[in-house]
Picture (cartoon, helix red, strand yellow):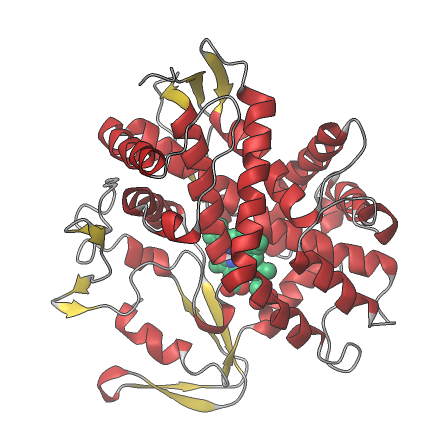
Length: 419
Ligand code: HEM
């Protein structure tokens, strides 16, 4: 509960491990055999190594593909909106982000009805995702209605004979495929289940996080105006035009420099993220904490950090329940100094976990959400079409980004090219 102690837990990664726990939970939830060292030597390490494809230069490439795919989807879905069109916001974010992420990571389904195939996978994904908190809580899948059947159908989409038909997928997925091929004890279904698990990781949190970022912006006109201003300014200064061709290109530096957009996004992540960082003690040992404090741990003891307490701590964030889009900006620059009781915090925002269990897709996730909002706000006038409160649904507390308790209608219309 005390953020000044986090560092002592995070840096003891040898004694305080998370893989055993994550492996058990993920293999059960996504239906692949646990990554035991005896049966699958170095599989875990090999899979971790290829997270390099989500950083550095490969990150630029995958982000460019995502930008292009997002624009294609916006063009296909929204370019007729010369007058107001109304849609449900969560459904909209889900449909755009799911398809763009799917095509970017796994490739395009070349059939004439490619969009339809992906939306069928998405609909099954939504059904599976609704049961995710129960699976994570160890409820037998047999008690969860059609979840077992839906999971099986989803996994079948990722069998090699189906995946090889998809065109232009990412290096990270290709590299995962190559690794799985080296393990004879992994059956075809097991490999497909691993791919499905990666799909869940790549969209399960990004979709609700995109929803909250959009929702809070639309609820706060001053935030919307500031972010839109920043976006328009970037387009102008780089000589790019929004318009019917949907051909905007953003470099990593330009994305990084969108400080208002990033701050607004961080602020919504602060408010909607609820992931618990769990570690299990690998041996009996004494965990030394700040100020000569000690905790005597037994092998098998659990430690959990729960950063949402930090995110909602009024000593760190004034009026923590209020959305302040510029909370992470100081003198026009990114703000990274946050204090509690006069002391600077090393950790102040942790939607992506910490240390050894930190999300490898965090840079891509931030880029994806920025690009979604960039395209939306640069091309469209957008406003809420309903005046109702949307609250966090706490049923997946501890497991990542919380979903909204209800969906809400919004409307959008192509912006005039003159203003
Ligand atoms: C807003 C979006 C996202 C959030 C908030 C998020 C959050 C997290 C968190 C908290 C974990 C650690 C879970 C734990 O402690 O066990 C994690 C793990 C993971 N995330 Fe993300 N994530 C996001 C997007 C993505 C994306 C876009 C990708 C991939 C393209 C991705 C890939 C992964 C993977 C593969 C893991 C497991 C890492 C491992 O094997 O240790 N995530 N994510």
